[in-house]
Image 1: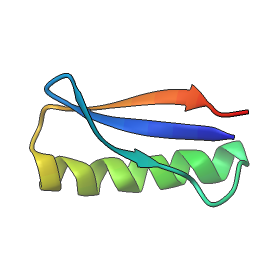
Image 2: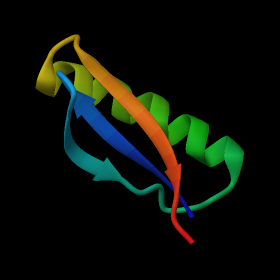
Image 3: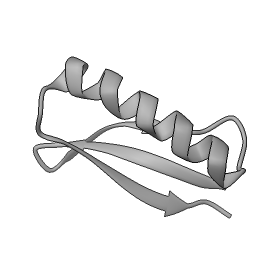
Image 4: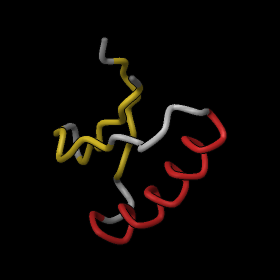
Length: 53
């Protein structure tokens, strides 16, 4: 399962888990979430991908 960590100023604030694991759906989901997170935390938001087995 692919999950994304939201990193703000070097600190992990939250983890985002897409509902489906299809790449097209993940891309659309992460794009929308990135817009929401940039409004929530400001411009210093990084998304880091990791895999959970």
